[in-house]
Length: 430
Ligand SMILES: Cc1cc2nc3c(=O)[nH]c(=O)nc-3n(C[C@H](O)[C@H](O)[C@H](O)COP(=O)(O)OP(=O)(O)OC[C@H]3O[C@@H](n4cnc5c(N)ncnc54)[C@H](O)[C@@H]3O)c2cc1C
Image (tube, rainbow, N blue to C red; front, top):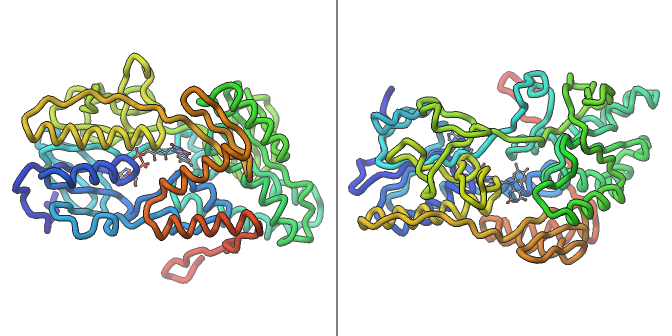
């Protein structure tokens, strides 16, 4: 395989990072304070803020408000190189990664490629269900929702129209809950105005959660409050029921029932996508990469894994840390400090997660927050959620745009992004 060119040989050691998400970008920031040469690979040329994807899907935010070009974040930085490329293979014996644009050697390799949606091997589901892991997924959802209401108008009977009005969300985690709440607000404030010919009392939003409760990672009272909020907003939440199959219209439930819906959004699980070349014993449950307490991949000398893709088992987290942004960022900052220690010949220090809590929003003024030792709900939780997310978004311009969008939508709930834009293929087909 040809070598990647235009990256000079490293005067010091080279750290190659695979994935510029929460973990990868935070690691680059930390490593810029050291003398290492840094090479970042990402299959996209931008970083995406996944917690707000649902707002792009619901036409509430522009895609660019939650995405940020990776080259822009790190421009004018010496010893930093970015390549938009997908890493396909790792060759630990040669200390080399292979990508779709060529191969590159490393002194240290850090895997921070995150996770992908888990369909538990059901290929039919994978083909027909919508996912929400990237900005392009969110745009697909936005287009499909709008298109379904346009198409619903072409049918005469309620029975024919109903599958276009039903919307099924699979998974009662934060992504499913936030999406459902947002859909309920669209149903209440926007859709009846845009489509006066349709009866939106007939629009039904379902959440199917196979487990016994929604928001299972949150405290019992927060989960109960979220359920109460969702019911208040008219969402049909069904726990203990799994979706077994979907052909694009028929949702087959574990009860044997079939529900008709033209749209099913799958948020029911994630799995780490394997990169070829790694030893089978390096992988743990969910395809996550097993690491020791300094994020070094088990059985490797100079390969590390951080963020969602990694699995560090500790006394407090025997099944690994939660796959959330805070863990990814804290592990990245910690690893950068450890790299600095390694460069100075010092011993790296084990990682310890500082749990700052969990939050989820169900709708306007309706949120729940579990902070260490205390839980909030309602307006204050919603305000806290908004402030924390605003602070976390990358780039001052993006912060301002998101704030303005939120402020406007709070008072005049009528976002103007309900555009069905479908890129044309070169031959002119949509
Ligand atoms: C819809 C949704 C809502 C969420 N809400 C919350 C929330 O409210 N709070 C919270 O804390 N967490 C939330 N999360 C989880 C949070 O986003 C993740 O924990 C976090 O993104 C993990 O960071 P990461 O860097 O490990 O992976 P990611 O941020 O996923 O980054 C991985 C990067 O690797 C790149 N990549 C992958 N494979 C390759 C490859 N082979 N070659 C090159 N590049 C590659 C990808 O393009 C991506 O840029 C949510 C996630 C989703 C999907």
